[in-house]
Image 1 (cartoon, rainbow, N blue to C red):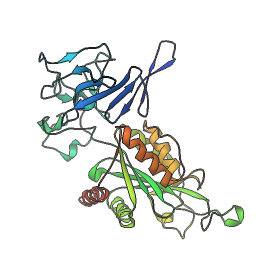
Image 2: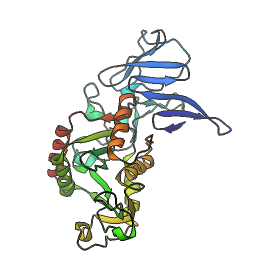
Image 3: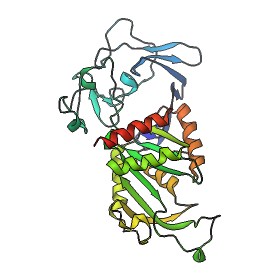
Image 4: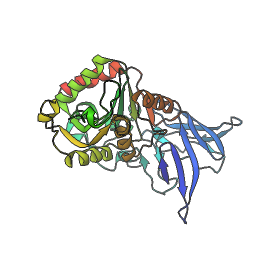
Length: 335
């Protein structure tokens, strides 16, 4: 299988790719047509409906921990492979013949009723087994993957975009921009009151510094937040940490970034070619998320993300951004 954003392809023995389908918020579009999913309160797919005539193609009932029930009402009336089942996640038994469910960050075994690797945040919950699924309450709780990257897009003035990984007080902010020395206007054109080139500085902010940064975003207002459920936090962390470790200290002593240990020059910034939006999009690609079409302006990036969130169930727009960011600030301050 080859995944490209919401698109899924199959690779045959010769290496050639064939289109299988694309995920939409209510199901999938396949080569056979539109397939709508009927889900329960946990997101588990209980029914698959053919879009052309409303025929029921598949019905599933689930045991407590995600195993498909043996009730006689369960039906499969076609030969298509529907790999999304418990919690709306991908059933690995369909294509790979292993009885696991892929939650993104970890694999889960419905038969064993446990994760196959420990919770990376288990130190925050000593009273719960690091292998326990949803703290032993699978009827009321769900676990998307425990971690998801988020894109923040500020739309006031010239705008800005940045990305976060982790959850709660483990959130890490990666923000890139012209935080260092600017290229003198005499050596390059200016755009309005802005010099388009300069040191491209990456900040990595955690804890109190992350909280203060998010407060400034909240206070400025006019911003959007998107959760990328298919993104790989670890790969995005590795990408930014690699850039940071190979970076250099900002050179302008008059800039706050000069004496900041969380800031490094990673390349040359250019407002129209290499900016906060393009860097955010590059990080998402490293994390397994392809955003198309590519843009360079934050306001256009927001339009693309907003459109994708309508039909791509791997991109979720946070509706109450103020409540979300206030809760995250509170969690960061609790460290």
